[in-house]
Length: 184
Length: 343
Image (cartoon, rainbow over all chains, first blue to last red; front, side, top):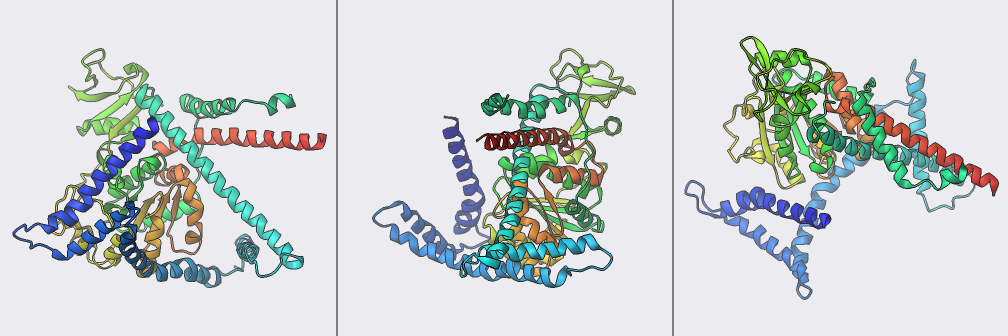
């Protein structure tokens, strides 16, 4: 029952927020003739697109929803692909080659860490290279990659534990201080 | 013994974790919170800003991640206002901007007893929870040169003199705006533009026209004539973007679009779960710093000297809970190895 109430409340809240912040100011208000600002008739196009999306609910006519959906996917891809490639691939490779020189004279620890970093990247990538059988040198290097992957999963798990404990701490702080009025 | 440990009820483990969180809070154990390099980078990013600089705080979180992100919001707002940095808030998540508004006007901001005295003298409303006030929230006022309790329930302590401002009691004000010395003026020092629908589209619009993309403040008033946005055209007029992020859209989108396309410095405060996802951006310099979870917030409080912060308060239970978890992992592994040896 608590789950149903939570889902219902969230959906209701989401609808009201979306109506007040999106539909009303960005669509309905602009389709009205407000005197100083004329009607923005071009907004009828996204309105029709939005209505077409609702056809996803119909078994018979759900093909109608594919048109606005494909438009959205196309725009999203067009906007995203070049930027994501730049930030997630080019900038990363650039940083590993040029920005952080592997050997820094006088700073042996950072230098060793940088070398380890490059080894970790290469061996981990090799683990996902399936065009050659993981035997011999490739197999051994891929096994080193598994170790690095395990360490990174461990770090992610550690952060997850911290996040969950933080939620508990917040609730306990609320119960002790706000609810019971105990000075902490 | 081995059999007992093997069959230990999971509810015993839950109880141990609960006690490891509750007891340190009640006893008031304190641990030092040293700062990590990624938190130092965030502090440096803010510290390098000149007074009068403009920062965008993108509130990309909601109630589910409030426990980790809200302490960051409080500490960052306080730092910005104390150092005369202008703050423009927007929310790429529906609830985010409202949570920042809460931090500004409603959330508890703990203060030291000396600070409490000073703020009461300034006429600000200071609340107190202490053994003296029988476990209820009261305000303190200065009447005829004396500090007295104001019991709004009209019973008990009303009018009684508050003699000892003890560090064991909790003093706080409501909202960051009441915890700082200077007056923060909406539209001049601070602007909350509320939830902006459109996700990435909002960011891409802001790259060329910040005011046009944000359009109105949280109450629906147009922002184009407000003083805080004077001279603000493109995203390059912003000195730092700080994304309080717990998912998509959030810090990643700011890195990809604002930093990737326009080279604007971006820093972030993220939930601990997503922290590892952002480490590559930090190492490559695409992020100017990162606060990771409640620990990151506590470290930022240490860096800025806000030792009364909510995050710092949560660090000792956090450490004890981690110790208990480590203990259980070690015990579990010992049992596993002994079992293996036996078989």
